[in-house]
Length: 301
Image (cartoon, rainbow, N blue to C red):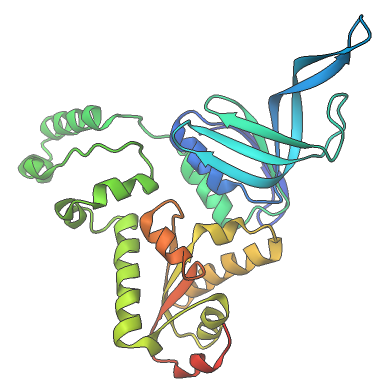
Protein backbone atom coordinates (compact mmCIF):
# COMPACT_ATOMS: atom_id res chain seq x y z
CA UNK A 1 0.00 0.00 0.00
CA UNK A 2 1.41 3.37 -1.00
CA UNK A 3 0.58 6.09 1.52
CA UNK A 4 0.42 9.44 -0.29
CA UNK A 5 -0.50 11.56 2.73
CA UNK A 6 -1.67 10.99 6.28
CA UNK A 7 -3.07 13.50 8.73
CA UNK A 8 -4.85 12.10 11.76
CA UNK A 9 -4.87 12.13 15.55
CA UNK A 10 -4.64 8.83 17.45
CA UNK A 11 -8.12 8.17 18.85
CA UNK A 12 -9.25 11.28 17.03
CA UNK A 13 -10.28 12.43 13.52
CA UNK A 14 -8.23 12.59 10.35
CA UNK A 15 -7.62 11.11 6.94
CA UNK A 16 -5.20 8.97 4.93
CA UNK A 17 -4.73 9.22 1.16
CA UNK A 18 -3.49 5.94 -0.30
CA UNK A 19 -3.05 3.88 -3.46
CA UNK A 20 -3.55 0.08 -3.46
CA UNK A 21 -0.61 -1.36 -5.37
CA UNK A 22 -1.62 -5.04 -5.25
CA UNK A 23 -4.74 -7.08 -4.56
CA UNK A 24 -3.83 -7.66 -0.91
CA UNK A 25 -3.88 -3.89 -0.39
CA UNK A 26 -7.59 -3.91 -1.25
CA UNK A 27 -8.12 -6.44 1.53
CA UNK A 28 -6.26 -4.10 3.90
CA UNK A 29 -8.45 -1.19 2.79
CA UNK A 30 -11.56 -3.32 3.34
CA UNK A 31 -10.46 -3.98 6.92
CA UNK A 32 -9.64 -0.31 7.51
CA UNK A 33 -13.08 0.88 6.42
CA UNK A 34 -16.18 0.92 8.59
CA UNK A 35 -19.78 2.01 8.08
CA UNK A 36 -19.89 5.72 8.91
CA UNK A 37 -16.42 6.46 7.50
CA UNK A 38 -15.97 8.78 4.50
CA UNK A 39 -14.23 7.91 1.23
CA UNK A 40 -13.23 10.41 -1.48
CA UNK A 41 -12.32 9.11 -4.94
CA UNK A 42 -12.61 9.75 -8.67
CA UNK A 43 -15.64 8.09 -10.21
CA UNK A 44 -17.90 8.02 -13.25
CA UNK A 45 -21.61 8.88 -13.14
CA UNK A 46 -24.28 8.85 -15.80
CA UNK A 47 -26.06 12.22 -16.00
CA UNK A 48 -28.87 13.56 -18.18
CA UNK A 49 -28.34 16.70 -20.28
CA UNK A 50 -30.73 18.76 -22.35
CA UNK A 51 -30.30 17.92 -26.03
CA UNK A 52 -30.62 20.40 -28.88
CA UNK A 53 -33.75 18.56 -29.99
CA UNK A 54 -35.40 19.34 -26.69
CA UNK A 55 -35.02 15.85 -25.30
CA UNK A 56 -32.51 14.58 -22.78
CA UNK A 57 -29.35 12.64 -23.54
CA UNK A 58 -27.48 10.41 -21.10
CA UNK A 59 -23.79 11.16 -20.72
CA UNK A 60 -21.10 9.62 -18.53
CA UNK A 61 -18.99 12.20 -16.72
CA UNK A 62 -15.91 11.80 -14.56
CA UNK A 63 -16.00 13.55 -11.22
CA UNK A 64 -14.68 13.39 -7.66
CA UNK A 65 -17.13 12.38 -4.94
CA UNK A 66 -16.98 11.86 -1.20
CA UNK A 67 -19.54 9.48 0.28
CA UNK A 68 -20.44 8.42 3.81
CA UNK A 69 -20.18 4.64 3.82
CA UNK A 70 -23.31 2.57 4.32
CA UNK A 71 -22.10 -0.70 2.78
CA UNK A 72 -18.65 -2.10 1.98
CA UNK A 73 -18.23 -5.04 -0.40
CA UNK A 74 -14.94 -6.75 -1.20
CA UNK A 75 -14.88 -8.69 -4.47
CA UNK A 76 -11.71 -10.75 -4.15
CA UNK A 77 -12.23 -12.40 -7.55
CA UNK A 78 -12.52 -9.08 -9.36
CA UNK A 79 -10.01 -7.32 -7.07
CA UNK A 80 -12.33 -4.39 -6.41
CA UNK A 81 -13.99 -2.68 -3.45
CA UNK A 82 -17.57 -1.46 -3.95
CA UNK A 83 -18.52 1.27 -1.54
CA UNK A 84 -22.09 2.54 -1.34
CA UNK A 85 -23.25 5.62 0.50
CA UNK A 86 -24.65 9.13 0.28
CA UNK A 87 -22.76 12.01 -1.31
CA UNK A 88 -21.62 14.55 1.30
CA UNK A 89 -20.12 17.28 -0.89
CA UNK A 90 -21.97 19.61 -3.23
CA UNK A 91 -21.48 18.80 -6.92
CA UNK A 92 -23.13 20.05 -10.10
CA UNK A 93 -24.04 16.49 -11.09
CA UNK A 94 -24.79 14.80 -7.76
CA UNK A 95 -26.77 16.45 -4.98
CA UNK A 96 -25.82 16.12 -1.34
CA UNK A 97 -27.65 13.10 0.04
CA UNK A 98 -27.87 11.22 -3.26
CA UNK A 99 -26.62 7.64 -3.27
CA UNK A 100 -23.56 6.61 -5.26
CA UNK A 101 -21.32 3.55 -5.47
CA UNK A 102 -17.56 4.05 -5.63
CA UNK A 103 -15.36 1.31 -7.06
CA UNK A 104 -11.82 1.18 -5.68
CA UNK A 105 -9.37 -0.83 -7.77
CA UNK A 106 -5.62 -1.34 -7.75
CA UNK A 107 -3.57 1.78 -8.61
CA UNK A 108 -6.58 4.05 -8.02
CA UNK A 109 -6.01 6.69 -5.33
CA UNK A 110 -8.64 7.30 -2.66
CA UNK A 111 -8.89 9.14 0.65
CA UNK A 112 -10.28 7.49 3.79
CA UNK A 113 -11.56 9.86 6.48
CA UNK A 114 -12.52 8.71 9.95
CA UNK A 115 -13.97 10.44 12.98
CA UNK A 116 -11.80 8.18 15.14
CA UNK A 117 -8.51 6.52 14.15
CA UNK A 118 -8.23 3.90 16.87
CA UNK A 119 -5.13 1.85 17.69
CA UNK A 120 -6.23 -1.17 15.64
CA UNK A 121 -6.77 0.89 12.48
CA UNK A 122 -3.42 2.65 12.93
CA UNK A 123 -1.57 -0.63 13.52
CA UNK A 124 -3.13 -2.16 10.42
CA UNK A 125 -2.18 0.88 8.37
CA UNK A 126 1.43 0.73 9.58
CA UNK A 127 1.68 -2.99 8.79
CA UNK A 128 0.30 -2.43 5.30
CA UNK A 129 2.66 0.43 4.49
CA UNK A 130 5.87 -1.16 5.80
CA UNK A 131 8.28 -1.59 2.88
CA UNK A 132 8.85 -5.24 2.00
CA UNK A 133 10.31 -7.21 -0.86
CA UNK A 134 7.63 -8.34 -3.29
CA UNK A 135 8.55 -11.86 -4.28
CA UNK A 136 6.53 -14.72 -5.65
CA UNK A 137 6.95 -17.94 -3.68
CA UNK A 138 9.33 -19.37 -6.31
CA UNK A 139 11.43 -16.23 -6.49
CA UNK A 140 11.66 -16.00 -2.73
CA UNK A 141 12.53 -19.69 -2.38
CA UNK A 142 15.39 -19.26 -4.85
CA UNK A 143 16.52 -16.04 -3.20
CA UNK A 144 16.43 -17.65 0.26
CA UNK A 145 18.56 -20.63 -0.75
CA UNK A 146 21.11 -18.47 -2.59
CA UNK A 147 21.44 -16.14 0.39
CA UNK A 148 21.75 -19.10 2.75
CA UNK A 149 24.65 -20.49 0.70
CA UNK A 150 26.29 -17.08 0.33
CA UNK A 151 26.08 -16.31 4.06
CA UNK A 152 26.46 -19.93 5.17
CA UNK A 153 23.23 -19.94 7.15
CA UNK A 154 23.44 -23.51 8.41
CA UNK A 155 19.89 -23.79 9.86
CA UNK A 156 18.41 -23.00 6.44
CA UNK A 157 20.88 -25.12 4.46
CA UNK A 158 20.35 -28.13 6.71
CA UNK A 159 16.56 -27.84 6.63
CA UNK A 160 15.97 -26.80 3.03
CA UNK A 161 14.23 -30.11 2.29
CA UNK A 162 11.55 -29.13 4.81
CA UNK A 163 10.67 -25.89 3.00
CA UNK A 164 7.28 -26.19 1.29
CA UNK A 165 5.99 -24.21 -1.67
CA UNK A 166 2.21 -23.99 -1.51
CA UNK A 167 -0.05 -22.46 -4.15
CA UNK A 168 -2.99 -20.30 -3.08
CA UNK A 169 -5.35 -18.06 -5.01
CA UNK A 170 -4.07 -15.06 -3.04
CA UNK A 171 -1.49 -14.00 -0.52
CA UNK A 172 -3.47 -12.85 2.49
CA UNK A 173 -4.68 -14.44 5.72
CA UNK A 174 -8.06 -15.51 4.38
CA UNK A 175 -6.24 -17.66 1.78
CA UNK A 176 -4.69 -19.75 4.54
CA UNK A 177 -7.83 -21.90 4.46
CA UNK A 178 -6.46 -23.44 1.26
CA UNK A 179 -3.20 -24.24 3.02
CA UNK A 180 -4.68 -25.47 6.28
CA UNK A 181 -6.50 -28.29 4.51
CA UNK A 182 -3.20 -30.22 4.58
CA UNK A 183 -2.36 -31.59 8.08
CA UNK A 184 1.35 -31.66 7.28
CA UNK A 185 1.28 -27.97 6.43
CA UNK A 186 -0.74 -27.17 9.54
CA UNK A 187 1.98 -28.81 11.62
CA UNK A 188 4.72 -26.77 9.94
CA UNK A 189 2.92 -23.44 10.36
CA UNK A 190 1.75 -24.12 13.89
CA UNK A 191 3.08 -20.76 15.11
CA UNK A 192 1.31 -18.57 12.55
CA UNK A 193 -1.60 -16.31 13.46
CA UNK A 194 -4.12 -18.23 11.36
CA UNK A 195 -3.11 -21.53 12.93
CA UNK A 196 -3.32 -20.00 16.41
CA UNK A 197 -6.88 -18.95 15.62
CA UNK A 198 -7.82 -22.45 14.48
CA UNK A 199 -6.32 -24.00 17.62
CA UNK A 200 -7.93 -21.44 19.92
CA UNK A 201 -11.37 -22.00 18.43
CA UNK A 202 -10.93 -25.76 18.73
CA UNK A 203 -9.87 -25.33 22.37
CA UNK A 204 -12.91 -23.12 23.00
CA UNK A 205 -15.26 -25.76 21.59
CA UNK A 206 -13.58 -28.48 23.63
CA UNK A 207 -13.93 -26.37 26.77
CA UNK A 208 -17.62 -25.77 26.03
CA UNK A 209 -18.09 -29.55 25.95
CA UNK A 210 -15.86 -30.66 28.83
CA UNK A 211 -15.99 -27.69 31.26
CA UNK A 212 -18.66 -25.21 30.06
CA UNK A 213 -18.22 -22.95 33.09
CA UNK A 214 -14.74 -22.07 31.79
CA UNK A 215 -15.95 -20.83 28.42
CA UNK A 216 -18.43 -18.15 27.41
CA UNK A 217 -19.60 -16.18 24.39
CA UNK A 218 -21.71 -13.14 23.68
CA UNK A 219 -20.86 -9.49 24.52
CA UNK A 220 -22.56 -9.45 27.94
CA UNK A 221 -21.05 -12.70 29.24
CA UNK A 222 -17.58 -11.77 27.97
CA UNK A 223 -17.87 -8.32 29.56
CA UNK A 224 -18.80 -9.80 32.96
CA UNK A 225 -15.97 -12.34 32.71
CA UNK A 226 -13.51 -9.54 31.98
CA UNK A 227 -14.74 -7.49 34.94
CA UNK A 228 -13.75 -10.46 37.11
CA UNK A 229 -10.36 -10.69 35.33
CA UNK A 230 -11.24 -14.22 34.29
CA UNK A 231 -10.36 -14.10 30.58
CA UNK A 232 -7.41 -16.22 29.59
CA UNK A 233 -7.99 -16.05 25.80
CA UNK A 234 -10.29 -13.60 24.04
CA UNK A 235 -11.61 -14.59 20.60
CA UNK A 236 -13.11 -11.73 18.59
CA UNK A 237 -13.88 -11.21 14.89
CA UNK A 238 -12.64 -8.20 12.95
CA UNK A 239 -16.27 -7.53 11.92
CA UNK A 240 -16.96 -6.08 15.38
CA UNK A 241 -14.40 -3.34 14.72
CA UNK A 242 -16.37 -2.28 11.63
CA UNK A 243 -19.40 -1.33 13.72
CA UNK A 244 -21.01 1.93 12.57
CA UNK A 245 -21.31 3.13 16.16
CA UNK A 246 -18.00 4.71 17.24
CA UNK A 247 -18.48 4.11 21.01
CA UNK A 248 -19.18 0.42 20.27
CA UNK A 249 -15.99 0.13 18.17
CA UNK A 250 -14.03 1.85 20.94
CA UNK A 251 -15.47 -0.55 23.51
CA UNK A 252 -14.06 -3.55 21.63
CA UNK A 253 -10.70 -1.86 21.00
CA UNK A 254 -10.41 -1.09 24.73
CA UNK A 255 -11.43 -4.65 25.61
CA UNK A 256 -8.63 -6.13 23.49
CA UNK A 257 -6.08 -3.77 25.05
CA UNK A 258 -7.32 -4.42 28.58
CA UNK A 259 -7.22 -8.21 28.22
CA UNK A 260 -3.61 -7.98 27.04
CA UNK A 261 -2.72 -5.59 29.89
CA UNK A 262 -3.73 -8.14 32.53
CA UNK A 263 -1.77 -10.95 30.91
CA UNK A 264 -4.44 -12.49 28.71
CA UNK A 265 -4.28 -13.33 25.02
CA UNK A 266 -6.49 -11.58 22.45
CA UNK A 267 -6.91 -13.12 19.00
CA UNK A 268 -8.62 -11.08 16.28
CA UNK A 269 -10.16 -13.53 13.80
CA UNK A 270 -10.43 -12.69 10.11
CA UNK A 271 -14.06 -12.76 8.98
CA UNK A 272 -12.81 -14.17 5.66
CA UNK A 273 -11.18 -17.19 7.34
CA UNK A 274 -13.14 -20.33 8.16
CA UNK A 275 -12.51 -20.00 11.90
CA UNK A 276 -13.69 -16.39 11.77
CA UNK A 277 -16.88 -17.44 10.03
CA UNK A 278 -17.48 -20.05 12.74
CA UNK A 279 -16.88 -17.53 15.51
CA UNK A 280 -19.32 -15.12 13.84
CA UNK A 281 -22.11 -17.68 14.38
CA UNK A 282 -21.45 -17.29 18.14
CA UNK A 283 -22.00 -13.49 18.11
CA UNK A 284 -18.41 -12.84 17.02
CA UNK A 285 -16.95 -12.76 20.54
CA UNK A 286 -16.05 -15.54 22.97
CA UNK A 287 -13.56 -16.31 25.72
CA UNK A 288 -11.71 -19.17 27.38
CA UNK A 289 -11.60 -18.49 31.13
CA UNK A 290 -8.89 -18.88 33.75
CA UNK A 291 -11.39 -20.23 36.27
CA UNK A 292 -15.04 -21.35 36.22
CA UNK A 293 -17.82 -18.75 36.31
CA UNK A 294 -21.04 -20.77 36.74
CA UNK A 295 -22.95 -17.58 37.65
CA UNK A 296 -22.83 -16.51 33.98
CA UNK A 297 -25.71 -18.92 33.35
CA UNK A 298 -27.97 -16.60 35.38
CA UNK A 299 -27.12 -13.54 33.24
CA UNK A 300 -29.06 -12.87 30.05
CA UNK A 301 -26.88 -12.76 26.93
